[in-house]
Length: 235
Image 1 (tube, rainbow, N blue to C red):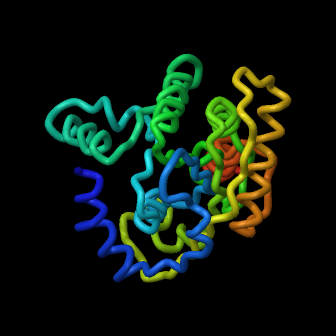
Image 2: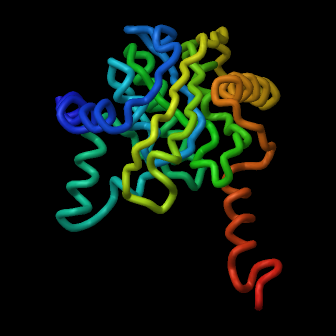
């Protein structure tokens, strides 16, 4: 209920009146049944844009810090994200991250849609970085089809470190579904192969150059170049 209220009264008017995204291939998203939407990640507004143009509710994973805040504001934030179908994920990895993957599998088993950004975080440089294997684990555990999504120009709508929406028309492209037979317990080599196939499909939709580095490593390297004590700095 909260999801539809926020989407219909808040997100949709802003997106359709101000952002006016160009949308291609939306018919590739099934109207019902389990589906994984796997997209590149350029801006904080990405899940809002995808959720607004896709008619059915989409569940995403969100860093767990948003769910564990204290005080009235922290509790309200946690309640908000739960109400709009977001799942907390501990990005430190291990058992905590595995729990988020299990929750995603349960949602798909119930016939719902699940959205994921395989890079794990926003691209710091506009390149498409190495995908993490979570998307492959979920797909091979459930057999749910993966719709590759290419987002173009969303970082020009909401730039990094900005809270101001800019008048720019991004493009959202939805590719043909990728279907992998269920393989619970697939080995690491298979997980990497499926992940690479998904990333190649996303790149075909987004037009991005691929980068074999993890997005967090690329971000850390960029930040190091711009700190006084980093390479080339004054320290």
